[in-house]
Image (cartoon, rainbow over all chains, first blue to last red; front, side):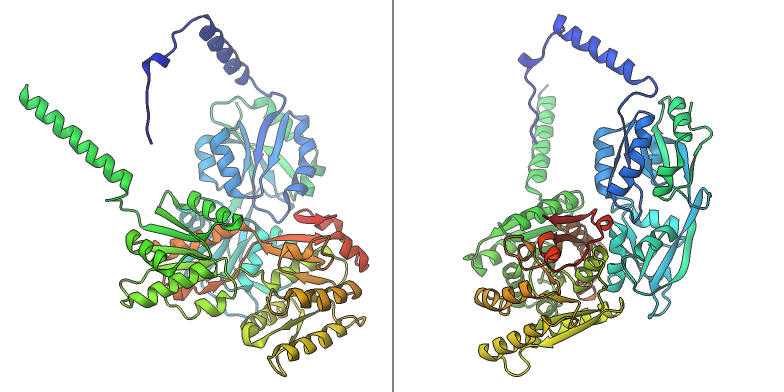
Length: 256
Length: 332
């Protein structure tokens, strides 16, 4: 609350101060070069797979191109980390606007059928009626701040639902539906297939979203990422397949 | 010169008033939300989570109560704070909130709210028009489906022993939810032939004995009922049977799945971080969107932690699907 400034504490620029400034300048220069060992790659995308599964499939692949991958289980943790650390590289769903404002896509993932995009599907209980998504309580995995979620989901689903219930991970969508806290849930067909191993509750598809790109790898705006982009585009597809992607594509215009 | 001095003094005075108003919260256009809670760690975790999530949109207050806190102390706090909404954690706080609303009488003076982290809220909050709730018990649907996912044994029939006087609604809800997973809930009301202690004990013993028979049930769901699980009965009836049966006992608290207790095979408990998210959505719905608490009703806990007692599951000879243990806390 209080901000106190004491003139006596203002240091003059002396040799010590200059050496700190020189070091800072040197570090800034070093950090602007392309592809550094151990550069952080923070990742979040909605999936029924656990963090451990995704990290064990992809970590060694990204190590090869000098990126230290950390996968986040929850949107909130990812969002907080990006805001506090401002990393150079992130993997995020294409619809994340806050990422799109500050980052440029350099590599896109293709889905299992080799396509770059998919549609979410809307599911409801098979033994119930067919609710209109626009009049429904729609259950979704959290992918924006509270203030923005309605707008983001409205864009994806073509209609703004009556209310939105968010959960932090896709496995919580089935309980949401069964407990009647939501009457429709939104899932990718891939996640639905994974969740069927855990839940056998019969559901039916009542609609689908706009076409959405699979997650992408982004680089901070203004950063040179040509070498990284080329290296990632050559990654082995074994690790990618384990997390449900078939291949990567370098995106035109993203890399310098 | 005098004019400038006067003007400067007025500006300084005006800024001081603005600062004081900001500090005191007077004039804030944000709705006020107060949390009334006990001091124990779980409440503190959730309260701090709520604070982080809500502080941008609400003015916040908090009252920590103890066992001996009186209703008058809570009433005086609420009269002083005049919140738009109260978050009541645990049964004592919920009871105070409901008493307050009953005493003020006029609908305009009643305070809407959310009751959470208390037991049996389905029955308690049902009586209130002003409160929505989140039941704190881990739903049977989550407990059984999560357990089924980590074991190779098929789970088609689950047995539960309960007191119909208090748990009928919960049992019926669980029966419908498990039915969607093609799991039969075999529920036995142990107060069916009398609700005195002797009758309940005798029925409980007889029904639990059946669980020891091979093929009688695939799992036992142990309800968190302070009467059926009273220490003496837990020691004399429940524990020997759980240790002698081949059926896993599924419990609603991590304590009962501890290795040293040697009782529960698997537990699910509310995930407190996600509980915060669930509560925030209800607070927003009531305070910002104008949804009536009655319309929201009492929600079930959606996100759970999973705990597996490895020694217990090994002793009853059930194989684990080790690939499915990523987010399960395994007690070795």
